[in-house]
Image (cartoon, rainbow, N blue to C red; front, side, top):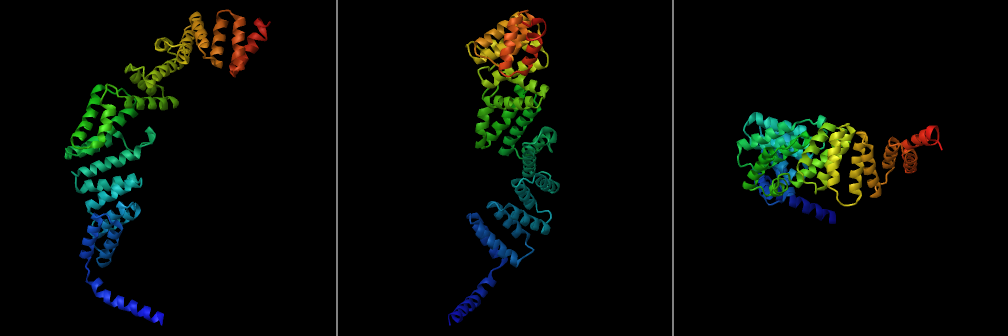
Length: 392
């Protein structure tokens, strides 16, 4: 009996509801869906877009709008499918191409995004958003990619941002991003950033701020407040470390020169740059230039601490290579006195002692070096202190 009542209720509901449902048109569902979408009820909007599509399967606009609603709730793959269906029905639907390209960026498919923006620009050659989004896709595609493997260049990225601002002079975000791309381009080139270039980049950010972009304020504060902003110094120092680790001497030296030219030696990054340049010049056998830097390094360290000791050690190395052994011995003695007692400083002092004919002192230093783990000292001890001329 209960089953009978249930069936009666179901049939009653179905036959009463059918006229009401059938009275709804695709246009009604689209209007309702758009209202729900505006109210933030995206899932219910999607359901109504689907009803509209069931009544009008060839309605390209319904697919496009449903795709847009899906993208708002991060259903990116499903949104891309809907944009594709809309484009099958209307091949030149610029809005769907733009939206699909933007959604491709969200899931990291940059080549597909660029292809969509290219198609937009074939149909509408002066679309600032298409230029801007194409630049965005290229910009994202090169992040974290090694220089020789970058699929797109900063030149073309900056070019797309420039097209966007030339078409729409009130495109604040395009000015903002063009400034960032230009700055990144200079970072990766490892060449000197001139005052004029920094001023021009800052102009882009000032334009963005004047046009209402509040997010650019921090960038202006970081880069445009000083002759060489701290943020830029930090980035340059980080890049210099990376290049030095990859044995790219010329690019490293260019960045170190830029940092040292700021004369802001109170900053750890600038002080480190001077120290790195000494080491790089010693490695390149530019001993006269290295000595000048090392002397400056010592003069910057008046305190009797390990920083001064390390500077004295580097200065001592320069003197060794210039065969100024007495000067070198004085530097190494002071460095050890200040606590810089590594295996290699004892090894180098042993070499200096040997050159100054202080054989017994040389053997003592080499023994200390060996005790601290320097295998080179073992050979010296074997040759000069246990066998041969200086055997006791």
